[in-house]
Amino acid sequence: MDIPYEFLGKIFVYLMLFALAGTGIALLIGAYSFKNHKIIFPGFVLFMLYLFYSPTKLLCRVFRIRETLVDDILIDVRNAITLDRFVRTKENRGVFLPQCMRHPECKARCDPIHGYECKRCGKCDISKIYEAADRYNFKVFVIPGSSFVKKIFKEYRPQSCLGVACYNELAEDMQEVSFIPVQGVLLLRDGCFNTKANVEEIIRKMEMCDV
Image (cartoon, rainbow, N blue to C red; front, side):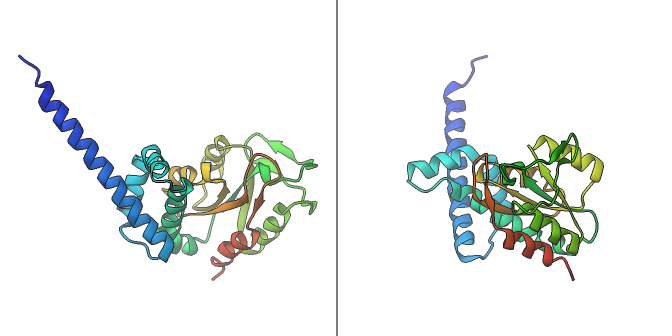
């Protein structure tokens, strides 16, 4: 039996064109939603941009669009569609902070499951977030990496969570825990050392749950 290579080749090309067109449409819809704060077809946008995450960033490079727009869209759309459930969740609420927010002279011990145990010395913004978390019934975890998220979820079993991270990690991490209501806040200054976060935004999201 002859293999119809030409026919299979045509199917492959059509599928690639379809995927490219779908990704482009999702990117345009997402960009419109992000700019105008009006979410349109969120399920389609999330599905296409996560499925074709790397090609979409390549598409941005080709058209000289900043690549982080893809992450902005994914985070913004996810925040919008889970906000109501996030606010309504009253128990087992977690805040996940990256260890890079710690002060360079931080002496906190790193627990093998829960991450760094903050001493609330006041040298960095983490202590402010801890104080707000106490008021609004959130538990804070300062984690060295995403592997700790799985450990914490297994033991603490949060019913909602608020994550803080850089572009490279936040969109992906929010997708991994999308089975519960999740909100994300981007770092203002990223890197692997002495980073900064929008503390007011983090506290505001916790405060929204105090109803």
